Image (cartoon, rainbow, N blue to C red; front, side, top):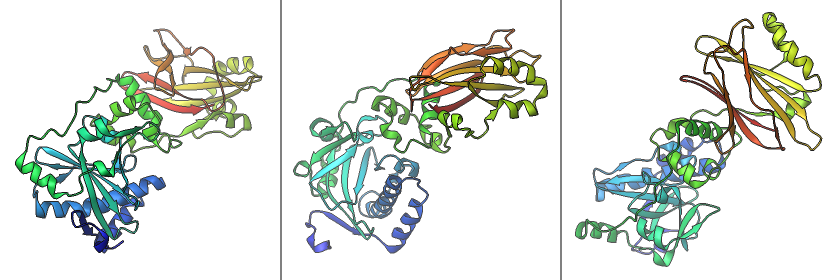
Length: 378
């Protein structure tokens, strides 16, 4: 497509080779193909559109979206005075419909006033804004796709001429652009921590579709959410233990006892009672001492995995710290069961449970401000 094919009412901007190269280089830091495309398209879009906007209309316009946002959600927010523009770029040459991720519509902190449909050439050589609409119109007239979690509006319902937006802002600065939003749920501190631990698992490739939107939206509505995605935690595959494939930092009873002779007696009693089971242990370093987490797995006849979880003090002659807790967390971030150490407990354990294949859960050890969590798959 060339510029003479674009209606004169639509904004066409050439993208400099420098912006193309910089955007491409920045996109390579993303892990997923989806993330790379999002970063590339959004960086091309904002690096080209923002200078034009500042020169032509709003010198004080500023970008708000963090680059990490593009890894998961397509779109860029730009602040202009008291209003917010949301740019949604797309590499498709098809412009019959404008689709916006639900995050930009239903999260109060993310919602904007005007939503601009941006077409970016797949090679990044040019971009055009082929229409715009408001939050109110997308929310009330848009078609909602529950699988993709998007609001879509037919192109015939869009305003094609971007100049109309600037005229309306001057003549009707109090124009109603947003509609009221339902409140998102308030999550407890423990649930927030549990959910972040789950979402940062390397096996989750599209976090935005992993949780019910209300829960996902409540997480993104928090100001600290970008920092929570900076580190991925490993997922421990328990069925590999039956194949003698040991996850990092987990040890067999034999290897652990070889390095901890003073602790041998406590574990040998348990190991003798579970001779037909698979056992692995992991040392957890608390601020002033260490504890040992032990999992005992049994292959059930119905294909499930029976799991017993126990927590010991590393030193056999010492009690566990009072009030240290051990919890089983579901894939939805809810506490299924938990147990807390009393003043003279040498060990604590959860009730034995069974998991069908591919069931995910997490184990959590908490003491005051210390919080350890690891995710497993049966």
